[in-house]
Structures are given as structure tokens and as C-alpha cells.
Length: 385
Image (cartoon, rainbow, N blue to C red):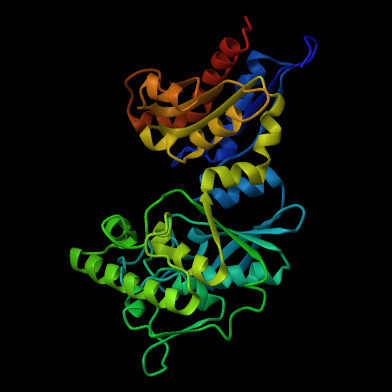
């Protein structure tokens, strides 16, 4: 950048859950940046960590259409789910929460043993029919603990008991499965590359596994947790026997009720940190190459934010770029000490709250506060009066 060039500011936030989408956050921040430096070149990239909201973030950044397919929710009821394809037609995007997420069954009592991911498999089949060569599965918000067995069934596989009969959907069925029949698997399922966006490193089974850590969030009682962990252990053993792939303690295999276990073993799927994968997909590395400032944000900036969430992913990309621009976080609340913030490669973090304020009072003013704060931060960072 020469002295005559306008500064380039990259705005790459996550959503403020319950308030603004990532695209809405980016728009509010952009307004503030331009208020501070009217001639600035601003690049807005909606971000996500691979969980809920990732599909919307990618669609916004790519500027592509959303497609919809009829499928079933996590308890087997008819529903519809969205999917998208990258501008070059190569990558199809499936968000597990679309078909198999907790919000879709919030009107029903939680069914820890019976909830499944079959709808996500049917959604993935529609994406394969579109001719993509890569499928990106965004994991997060799962209502089930079925080890990804439902995804395989939705793609045409059959899970059979010792008598050759199909087992029930969900974790309950994993306790009875004796054989995995892949003869009916979608013909393109093993021809494409599968990438899994995960934001946890939990293994499939054990004290830190899918059932123990995430099962209670999906309605599992202490007894259900024990049952599900034993069922997942049985499932992992069967997968290893059928495919030769060991997934019991694979980091990240416990995400979304264990979905990576099945997809890694059967389809060779590659689990990756969600924020980093999204950053690559929306072109963040290229965008920050000549940036003078990078602004990211999320609802709560805390210790989890620097462990694979969006702020961490953005900071890592910025640190690896030729420009090495300062990275600033704007958040609803800032709970991480300044020393830990800097250690994560983030220059500073600021809260939009003007002082002690109730959340319900702050929410309606989120966009306006983001704009005001972004203007102040931009003036400071770019030394504008």
C-alpha cells in the first residue's frame, strides 16, 4: 500500500447469537469503518466456526443460491433442509443442524436414544446428485448420539442385527448392530472428498466422549449416557472390523454425537477445525494479504474463543499473512484477560456494552453499538482524527 492508497480493512465476524447474523454484524462494522475513514476499502466476509450458521455465512460470502430438499428431522418427521454449492460448482455444503439439529425438534421431548442423523444423509445425497467433487459437512447443534450411523443410512447403507434385520434409528440401534451393509451406498459417496468442520476435539467414547460430554444436552439421563457410550464403543468396533479404521479415540470423533466416526471410517472424511475451514472457503487468507486492519467479532469473547472459534481462526490467518495486520475483536461481552488476548495473536478486544447493562436492553442496540465502536476502533488503529 502506497501513501495514496486507501487503507484496506477486512471485516470477518461470527454471528452474535440471538441478535445478529454474521452478515448483519459485518454490515454494522463496515458502516463504522467507513464513518471513520470514508475512503477505506472494506472487505466483508461472514464467518462461522463450522457449526450452526456456517451455511448462511458461506452463502453470504459466496453470493450463491440456496437449494432445498425434502428430508426428515432428528425424530423422523418430514421436514426440509437447505444446501448450497460453491461458485465453481465443486464444493457442496451440508449443515447438520439443518436436518438433524436440536432446534428442529424443540417442540418435542428430547429423545436421547432414538434421535438420529438420517435426514443429514438424505441431504448429503442431494448434494452428491448435484455433481460436486467435495462435500463440506458442518457439524454442530446435533440432536442425536448415533455415531453418524444415520448419515450412512440416509446415503443408502443398511445397519443390520444378528438376524439380518435393520436396527432402529439412533443410538438405540447401535447397541444391536452386527453388520454394516454398504451395497446400496450412494454411487458417488466414495468418489468425492468429504471434509468435516468440527469445533471440538473430543474422542468418540469415554469420559470425554460424545455421550458423556454432550449426551446430557440432548436429554440423556445418567443411565442413557452409559448405554450410549457402550453402544458407540460397539459401533466403533464394528467400523474397525468392517473398514480397518480405528475411531474410538480419534480427536474430534465425538463431535455432533459421533458423526465423524462413521464418515471417517467409511468415506475417508477429513475432520478439520471449523473456523479454519470456513476461512479458507470464503477466501480470508487472500483478503488479509494487504489489510491494514482486521476486525472480527462474536457475542461473547472468552477462553473458548481462542480455542478454535472464529476469533482464533481469523487471528491465525492474519498472523500468517504478509501484512500481519492488527486483529481487533468486537464483542457483546469480553471475558478474556488482555494478556491472554494478546497471547492468542489478537491486538485488543472491546465490548459494545457502554457499562453495566442488562442483555435485554443491549440487544436492540447491538447493530448501532457495533457501528459506533467500529468507528472508534478504526480511528485509533489507523490513526485517523
